[in-house]
Length: 330
Image 1 (cartoon, rainbow, N blue to C red):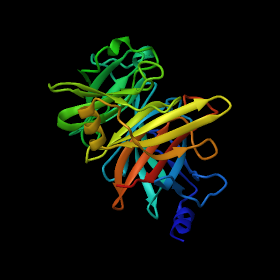
Image 2: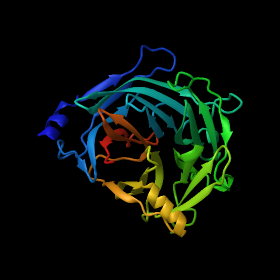
Image 3: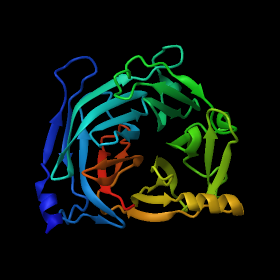
């Protein structure tokens, strides 16, 4: 009964936007059920659905979101796009579930010399919260990692100038459209980084722990499900990593796996020189609400740990920008 009441309480749609000031855009946020044929069903593996939205806008800048962060209390969203834009917005809830997005703003990401990012320099893919208002952003095509100080309340996002951060060894040799897709903060000032596909076809994924302030960089092998690429990473306070794995094939559609890597699994693999074996939490299949999910973030809402996922629509009218939220087990 609780699940039925929760599903029924979500508003059907919400429109958010400003009054036309600089950077403000109007975004439509329409509620979407997880199971199109079973609107009141909320379970997905070890996850429980806490509401989701289909986001759309007439603004040409909107879309292509490849990574997100969510404020600790779940009320604010930060996103980066394939076209080199930041987006910030407020998140609304009803009966504990995600129900709307308002106050959306978009602004240009800048390069180290203050230039607006364009062409091969603009493809932002990974995002990691470094603390105290600093965020690491990874880019592909022109492969690099930059740090932006946008302030804890994100008020410094417009005009923020980045500084360069170290990336994995050989980052400049990565394939054009196969750069660092997933990033998350690690222990002792390090950053977890991963590219989408295994460096060698048929082999495990590579997961790097890069120390930005000095220290020994480490790399691990992460078991790869055949055909799935790694597109997003989010870090828990205990050091666990939530990883998004994506599969797409024409005629089949999208499949998404959400897996967890525990600190013990990392330590065991390091000690034995073996492959990290993650725990499967959930798998999206083409018959449920799914798209090209890339970004992941964690927050606490109403005392419950939540996982947020966003899809990259590739600026394709046949795809959707989905923002989905789930209760995630501890």
